[in-house]
Image 1: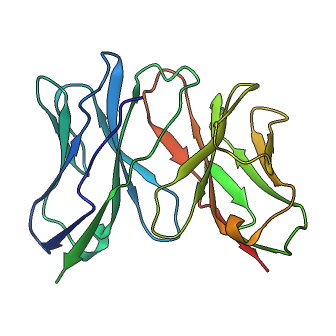
Image 2: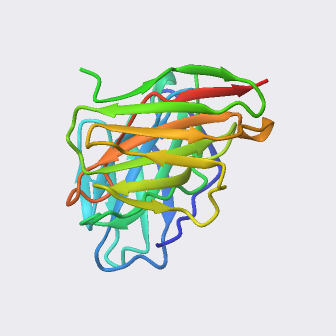
Length: 112
Length: 113
């Protein structure tokens, strides 16, 4: 399984765009990149998943360079409610009985 | 429309007294996971099922067992809880072919007294 590395914490202010980068140097050909958000005392929530280039949904964008050794989660115009821990995971796209291993995550603090 | 349901949300047990946590899902997903999460740490995978195939993580203590009697239900049994087993226990499900998209329950907060 590819190991992921993220910043431990980040600070931002309301209304700013936040970019969180994850390194996954050993990513395999069949691996997808997935990001989760977790609030205190709740289970993680799926945000976005991608394989290459750019993926966008109503919550975030995910940028993946051509070599796929890193990815960047972009949160547009954050609000106080985006304060949470964000996890980057890498795993096989078929997930045939595969594992989901969480790295340390990035604790995002959004200030007024 | 809860999809992954964990019961109870909060569980208090005595040191050494067996305890069972339960998880049910309405998604008909074939993969189910159990995680342990301690304060300020990432979720740690204990084991997972692919249908009935059980996969134990190498560092999961023998004190932890799991059962999956059918697709919808999965149980975590802690045979002799110690103070160090106090944590949030998370259940998750996923479907083969969807990459690493998983659905998590709200978790059960276990306190050992």
